[in-house]
Each structure stands twice: as C-alpha cells, then as structure tokens.
Amino acid sequence: MDKKTFDMRADGASITAIAPLEILDSRGNPTLQVTVRLLSGAVGVAAVPSGASTGKHEAVEWRDGDKKRYGGKGVQESCEKIKGEVSDLLLGQHAGDQLRIDKLLCDLDGSDNKQTLGANTILAVSLAVAHAAANHYAMPLYRYLGGVAANILPVPMMNIINGGMHADNALDIQEFMVMPVGFNKFSEALRAGTEIFHSLKSILKKKSLSTNVGDEGGFAPNLSSAEEALSLMNDAVTAAGYKPGGDIFYALDCASTEFFKDGIYDLVGMKKKMTASQLTDYLAKLCDDFPIISIEDAMAEDDIAGWEILTKKLGNKIQLVGDDLFVTNPKRLQMGIDKNLANALLVKVNQIGSLSETLTAVGLAHRHNYRAVMSHRSGETEDTTIADLAVATNCGQIKTGAPSRGERTAKYNRLLAIENQLGNDAIYAGRTILKK
Ligand code: PGA
Ligand code: ZN
Image (tube, rainbow, N blue to C red; front, side, top):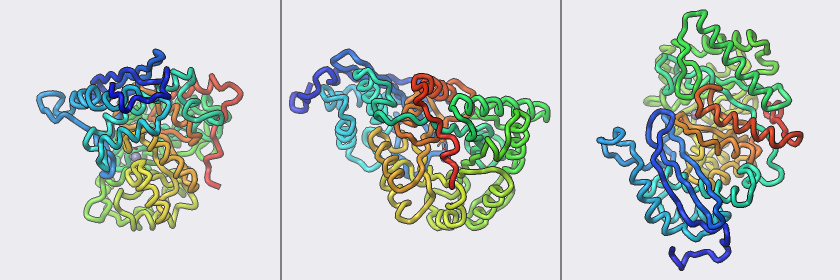
C-alpha cells in the first residue's frame, strides 16, 4: 500500500483489494468484471458493457489487440493494469469518496478519451467501488447514490424491433421501441410492454416473418421500411389490448451516424438519399402518422447544422435524444446546450467511462431542462447497475432492450425488485415524461 495516498478517513471503507476478471458479454466478446473489497469485508462487483454503433467522440475501450485471442478483443492487459498501477493508486482510499476515486483514475489515465488505461478499465473499477461502498453502508445502490429522494421508477423504452447495426435486415432505423406510459406502476407498464412483445411475435409468425431476436432482444424481421415496422407495432399493441397513442407510445433510435455519408443520409433499405432537412420532414411525417414521442440520434454525431434544423422543427413537439451526439460527455452536452441541439441526453456509463462523470452529465442535463435517459449498450452483461442509476438520478426513462435475453431482463428484474422494495413510496414516471 502506498502510505502517501493512504486515506486516514477511510476506516472500514478503505479499499483493500481490487480483483479484475476477463468475462464474456452478451455477444461473446470479452469484457471486464471487477470485484472491490473493503476493510469492513464489504464487497462490490461490476461488469462493463460494450457498444456496436459506437460514437466517434466516446471514450475508448482498451483491447489487447492480440489476434490469437478473441480476435484481438481480449482485456487481459486491462486486468494487469488494474492489478498493478490502479491498485497501487487506490488501495487504502475511501470507497465512499467516489468523486476522488474517479478523479484519481482519470488523472492516472491523463488523456481526454481515457485511451491510456481504457474507459472499460476505469469504469469497471469506478462502478465496483460504488457497489462496495453501498454494501459497506448497507444501502441499495440507488439509495446510496440517489439519497432519500430517489423514488422514481423509469418508463421502459422497450426495443421490440431491431434494425441497423443490430440486425441483418434492411431496416435503416436501428431501434423501434414501445413506451408503456399510461400506467400507475412500473410493473404494470413492464407487463404491458411484454404482452405487446408477445403479441408481436404471434403476428410475425402468422406473416411467416422471422421471430429470431437481435442483439437487444427485439425481433429482427425482414422489413425494409419504418412504416412497416410501426404498423406492425400498432397491430401488436391493439392485439394485446392496449391503445397506440393512449397508454402506449413509440420511440425511435435512428443511429443515423451509421448511414450518414458525404453529407447525405443514405437510407439503403428504403433506397432513398436525404438531406438533413428532408430527413427531418420524413421523421415529422412519421410522428404525424404514428404516436412517436421520442427520437434518438435523428442526425449524425457531427452534423450540427442538421441537429439545428431538426431541433427547430421538432424540439417543441417530441423528445430529441442525443446519443452519439453527446456521448454522455459533459463537454459535448454543454456544446449542445449552448447551440440548442436536441432536448435530452442518452446516458451510457461506458461512453464517458466513470460513474461521477456520468452523474455530472445527468446533473448538467437536468439543470438545463434536458431530459436524461439511462441506457444499456448492445453488448451487455448480467450487471444491473444502470437500473439503480435510473432510480438514483430520478431520470424517468430507461432503455434496456426487449423483455428477452437474460442480460436485458436482468435490468427489468432489478427495477421490479426496487419497486417492490420501495413499496408505496415508489412513483412511476409514466405520463410525466410526455412533453407538455
Ligand atoms: P450501441 O447501440 O450500444 O451498439 O451503441 C445502442 C444505441 O445506439 O443506443
Ligand atoms: Zn443510440
């Protein structure tokens, strides 16, 4: 232990061991799991997710690059860094001082995008420290991080039809989500979304369309237009006994950076090329025809002029979420606030790479009347930290896929457990998320 950095306040919350492990994510790629142990005996475990449609401005993952192992995607070097320099830095530190822990890690890395240690390396430790501290204080993570007022259960944005980079079909838009808004309880909303998922499966079967699921658990039928996908969703909602635009609304994630080429949005599945302005008009028409209340990454990450056009036209009507645009980075978000781009932040812990920076980004969003949506990645593990983060930040919305595949349902199941634990104190965000 480095005596110089030994934190005298740490007491029982002093970090005594940090143990990394290379595990697998839901795509069968290696990822990091870290266990942190405190002097009191409290233990915290966390594992980091990984994206497929990653933004250029995201903090970067450390991958071994040794092609003989996992095609170069191994994380053994991250494990070595954690056992070496990271442990040297953090052993003896107070696990309850998350800000200091994260700052020490960021300073050790020293780069803007965490390329020295890797955002995955830093995040795994950062999250495991928070879990260990919560356990030390005998509090659930949402309460430890969110305090007494953390009582709001998020509206699930359930990605039931997958396209784009997450599926092999011709759908240009990456995600078609149902948002069960008109319910009094999270568990009732989740039930509605799940019943809709099941009725969609029956409809797809009847039409001889594939019911295989994509990376986020949604179906990936061979459709080629958003209209087809949204019409099928209308049918599924109605067949399940709910009302599109009444209790159920829709959300899209265009992930449009993926099809933005040379200043033009090239929608290959639809066989159409569009300017930012044409894409905005197209999306506005979809919002007129279907009960869509939220669109994520409608424009590409660096198409600032496109975002301005989009926000001017749709920003007062629907939620416009910045994912690749903001990459959970307070600096990118501040740029968006200054330029009046979008009106909501997608929150992915591994885009920025530490817990305190994630919470800073959410705080910044809320202070500027931007909504925040907690989110998984397409490559996930059974780690459920984001469910607690959604409640801790009272952000009111969570994206964690379809109610299918264990790594997705793990988050929903954690939210059910939180709702159960909160009892009458649980508040479902529900209709409060609708734009006035
Ligand atoms: P990703 O996709 O995790 O593959 O980046 C999720 C999203 O774009 O929201
Ligand atoms: Zn996205």
